Image (cartoon, rainbow, N blue to C red):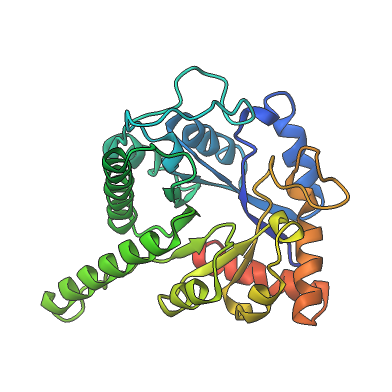
Length: 295
């Protein structure tokens, strides 16, 4: 019988929180059959995720992208997160060519995390409209990059699900219209991906599922009432993640999270789905390998 690893589809060992022991955290994860995708949040952390992944032949992968809160809009100032990055440069404009260059690495398996985040926002109506429009524009650019490179997308969304759904529906509609003009045998345009750390409503869940997206769940399920949402997600559309160093599950709440603690998320979801821990590990790992095209 082949042993199946448990797959953390959203970790940040590339962040400053692990600057002194990243190799050790990864080593103990791999020894315990925990695989991971380290996720970029801007160029510096995306490059770091790629460099870390290239040290390993198997079990450690990277995603690259510009997180919406790290986008330079000139309209709002975000509090610096020392867990994420040390440098003084955090906010940036999206540079398509630079990110495309990073994606040449075979260890890069996705574009992410990208999306919309309206938590920190301007107070005036006019500035708020400009702020949202800038985020949507850069999201569209990064979706174009994913489309060009045939890579799946890892979406971040906070207080913006309806806007994200609108963007995705518009993109899918445009891709479908383009496909109709292509000759037979041409590759179809399609956005594939996961809504990371899903905390939306049942209605929003259904809209994402109708578009074919996966839903990612992490330690936030121990803080918010997501039991009924999780019960409604088909098993073949669930991914599990830590979002480490954040959102540590019990009994580690308040401490730095790491991929090794993913088993607590898996166990909770297994209980809600009324299946064994081994089954949820097998299913979610199969889902991850399928989405991110990993052998």
